[in-house]
Image 1 (cartoon, rainbow, N blue to C red):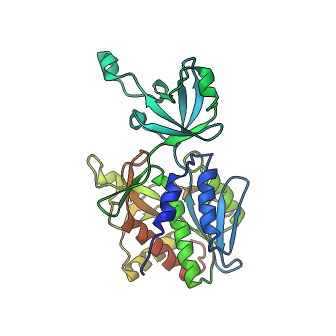
Image 2: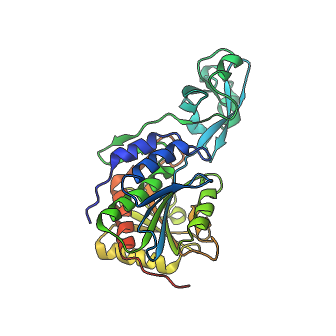
Image 3: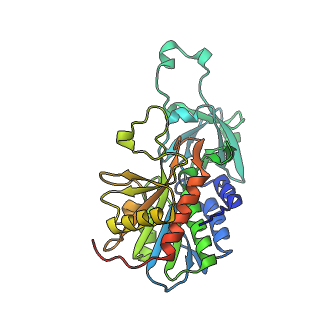
Length: 351
């Protein structure tokens, strides 16, 4: 199956500022794209956005990718106008040093620089200490608390200011790939299904707050009452120095879609996806989870009386950094597999 990705939409989605709990700008981009082809598009009070094909069809299939990203929130502004932060999601503070931050300010976006004492001014013992988020600050170029508070306030949120770039042709580098790429994939799959038609009721969901609580997955699955679900997220590319494949698996950039297997993944849904990949020549790898998948699937699978759920992931290097890296060929493989599955979806009984 030939899959052509809408990279213009992907780049616009990645540029949007949407940290966990504050996803409105990214959700607006996703919704505008969905409205160009979906039969029905709507949102809910939690912030999730839905795009549906063939309402009333059978079975009811949910496709979920979370639209939030890790970010920061302003907790304090000192007398010199410097801004202090807390993390929204899991940060390695080392990657923040020297970065630029784009805030959603009082009347527009505000740019700042993450500050840290220069190495020339550090004592020997300081140089050997691990960086902590509470020891960093952001400088937006003002000299007083009053001047900063004219542009920002306690509670303003921001993200690292890094735009998408392409390396070596089809390797894409950007912040927010975790998991803006999942939200992109489920809508891309829906777009291709809209062109060919589908008997199932298929609903793509851009879920919120995955980086904090899986709140969007819980509320959207409860709302939709799906009969089966596919969650799309990223997984660690294990082809990099220092990663033990015996612990982390063997998902690699350029090797295709990664299928999860484990207690939270429905075995029949997993088997169908793997059989489809093999029958249609879609490249894939398999990753095993001894317990939770640490994705939205953990919430979806437990919704109401339980939902048969699978996880398909895009391998990602440098996760939770400003320069996450994926291969667009892997994205095409995930979209192809979801389209093939949805086009032939049939009911799943119990385990």
